[in-house]
Length: 242
Ligand SMILES: Nc1ncnc2c1ncn2[C@@H]1O[C@H](COP(=O)(O)OP(=O)(O)O)[C@@H](O)[C@H]1O
Ligand SMILES: [Mg+2]
Image (tube, rainbow, N blue to C red):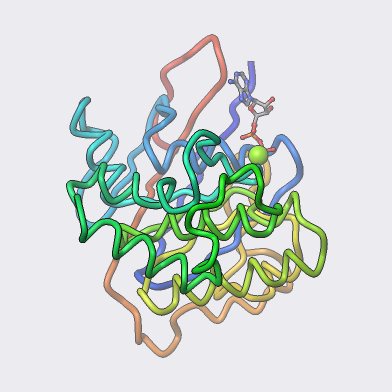
């Protein structure tokens, strides 16, 4: 048995872009799954927008996640039987936006990511970069305060990766969305406000990263916070807060 996360502790601020790096298997995806409540930790707490996600039960936790989070994955995870616009509209419909309003909003955000002409395209007909732009539109359509991205450029060639990165940063910045992005891509890290490294279960500022954070105090409203999170892979054992 080993502890994947061991007292990992971090706060993320509204509108901030934080890159999380770390070797393969260090627990980056696990960390995102804990923040979103998809995985459960043995101990510790996740707070988002003033709410303690880790103490919510179902179905409240699922509803909270739908409304407050957006997800971008390495392999896009679009629904292949739906077209581009329907994939985006789904995240609105799941949050109670229906009919013309939902169609208008999904078409508008797809235009914003440069896919205004591809609304009716089957997503498996789109290139990798286009699919990832659909996924970014889906993640942001319902305007969640936080977007979690797990190696969003990991499956794209260099040029496509830069284009996708620009789109992701532009949408999150215009909406003041907090972006927590797991990445191996140094350009993604270079675009972040801060870079954290996950190592031996703990999160620390990456050596040599600019790490200016919020020295000007401009964005101080706390948006997402995690405290003393620990998790182990089976067999589960209760651990105290570090
Ligand atoms: N479902 C699972 N069951 C058991 N162990 C897992 C599971 N998912 C991941 N792990 C283990 O947890 C650790 C962290 O995995 P992960 O969060 O996927 O790392 P990363 O995303 O940084 O590559 C690894 O040792 C991995 O093998
Ligand atoms: Mg991973």
